[in-house]
Length: 261
Image (cartoon, rainbow, N blue to C red):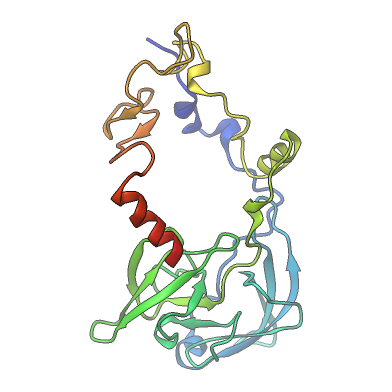
């Protein structure tokens, strides 16, 4: 019987819980209301802020309350090119301008959008990381759905009433700068969660990991593992459809999709 391995200990939480204390709050759209469903509502970007542990900047957007004498402040994921003092319009009849929030049915095919809802009124689910965007592929007016292409390249069908922000998320190209030193990686993950540094399984003893032990650092068996493997055994390439680098037709197909995306 081996030791309880790291992947199993993560499930218990403890030191592996995410570091949320200094985060600014959940970044999401306004609650869907009559004004957004039928017309539009105007807000103003009062501040652009950094959220610890998030690559994209956030916006503090101030709206007038629809029926009370007060302000409503929301945190939006910033789209590239937005600035303080900018007016943001949310609703069915808003213009197609970067930073505005519209239902997908009001956005033409081929438009670049971000922070797309998966279900109507969930306040934003897809394409929220820095530099990410989704593309509106097509609309089906018969059943009220829209087809979007996600940052992963996957196509997804969502209701046409789901909202999205026009433009791509700010902070793109963040991963292109090399980390250069361990100290930068330390500070990156310090505000996210305890996931760095990561000791490789082959560098451990047999008691601590299925890949551990042996006179040379080698796995000693296939790196793939079945989907229904028990915890403690389920490490490596889980339920892999294929492994190794892409060769032949698969490589050329992947290169084509990279060029188009």
